[in-house]
Length: 232
Image (cartoon, rainbow, N blue to C red):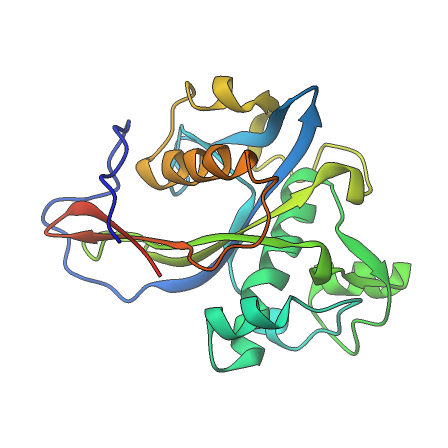
């Protein structure tokens, strides 16, 4: 099933760029309920960063250590198999999303557990606290691959979590400025790239279903430099 792409702000396509291989990455859409509506955590990337100057969800590329740390709880089995037949690789997307969210916002989705032996700075912090990623509290939103003709290209998996199931104080590394929870309708008015806008609209569509698991999820990609969306 295909749906027309949303009307968006800046395109991700960089004309003239030779195709590059995408890097696995994980993104976390942090939500909280406000009355009958939703608020979403977003921040603005620095001008010189990838997706510079626009608002994004916390997230980033999968580090090698993300595929080997212990977890407090695992992703739902159907989500793991949907992402990849290689469960270690599949799990890495969600672990990276949890780690990047902690680094960029200060918020933790974690429970008591042992991450195991690691030399990764963030996972050493988790180990010192006696906590590990609580992946069982993640919901799945969708998959996106940014255009082939882009210097920095990502094979991204989008997850969501409820702010009330997280701990920590909003702050983080400073990679995201103007970091705050925005009503979903207001978030859609911020400067966004097309992938971010689409995933916000997907959350908005699923809000009426209380974001319950689905049989089909979106895959956002590009064909001839134009957004192409299918559900499977």
